[in-house]
Image (cartoon, rainbow, N blue to C red; front, top):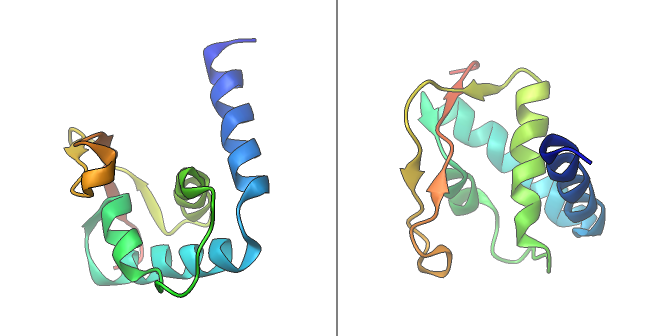
Length: 102
């Protein structure tokens, strides 16, 4: 299995195991973030997911962002990654996405 295949497999697994209500809320949050800002990261999307909607599989936001790109709402920017602002992520690098619907 190639690195790309492994990544796709892992993203598929976390997406399948995430709470359906959360996935729906997260996709709506991605749309709202892309409508509000020219450049977004997953931190911007997390801020818009209602705290009452939870999932045990928080890594599923990666597939949500990829779905938003497939829907034509965002695309990866050419900017370098930014550090995550959520303390639980220990400044992990985040992709900077460019809105296509702003």
